[in-house]
Length: 322
Image (cartoon, rainbow, N blue to C red; front, side, top):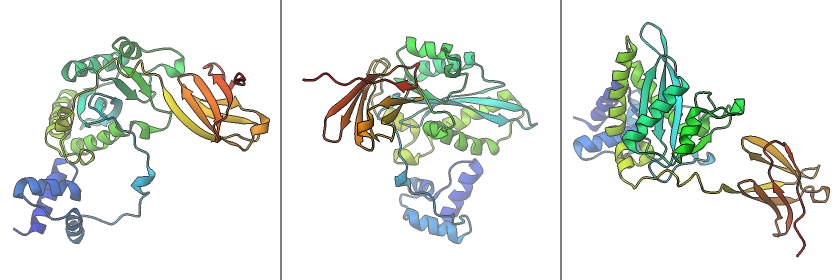
C-alpha cells in the first residue's frame, strides 16, 4: 500500500472515531503500525492533495501566546462544566476535571444540572482515584466559588481543609482555563459521533471516551505520549505545598500623569499613589502577598504599601530614611 493511502486510511479512521486527525497525530499512528513515517509536512501535503485540508488564513503566531503549564502531575487540576444534548434534544451538563501537566482527565460525569454538591462529590472521588492535587483552577461559576457573593462555597472550604490552593480565572477570560476548555472541544467531537438516548448511556460513552483519551490517544503537548503515561512518568505534587507559599511577583509599570501605578489584587485593579514628581517614570513593583515595594529603574525604593482588599485606591508610604 502506498504511504499516501495509509495516511488517508488512518485519517478516515480517526475522523470516524471523533479523534484528532491532524498530520502530527497521523504520523504517530503510522510509526506505531508500520515502524516508520514520513515527515509531518509530507503527511500534510498528502492530505492537502487528497482534499482533506483547506488552507486557512494565517493565524496569530504561537510565539505571541503566553502559556502557563504545571511542572508536575497533580500540581494543578483545571475544572469546568460544559453543556451537551441527548439525542432527543434534552439539555444536560458534563462536569470535568483535567490534570494541567499531563492533560489526563481525572473526572468526567454527566448530570441533569450541576450543583455545588456535585462538584464536591466528584472532586472527592477523583482525589480518591488519583491523589489530592496541590491546586485547583476553575472559572467563576457559582458552583465553584462565591466570589460575586462575597462568601465561600463548600467546595472552597473543602479545598482549604485538605491543603489545596484554589485559583480562579478572570471573568470573561476562558483562556486561563484553556486546557479544560480544549478538552471540551475534543470531547464534543467524540460525542457527536455517538448520540445517546439517556443520561446513563451518555455516562457509559463518557467513560469509554475518557479511557481512550487517557490511555491510547497520543497528545501533542506531551510529545505524543498518552496523558496517562505522562501522568505516571513523574513524581506527583502534594497538597499543602502551594497553599502556604507566599505569592511573589514583579510588575513593571510607568507612573501615569496623576502619579499612580496599578496592579491587580484579589481579582480587582488597585491604584497606588507614587507621587506627582515621578509621573512618566518607569518603575518596578515587587509584590509578596499584600506587601508592595515600588522601586525606580535605578534601584531606588520610593514607596511602600500594604494592600487593602476593601479599597481601590491604595495609600502608600515613603520608606524610612537610612
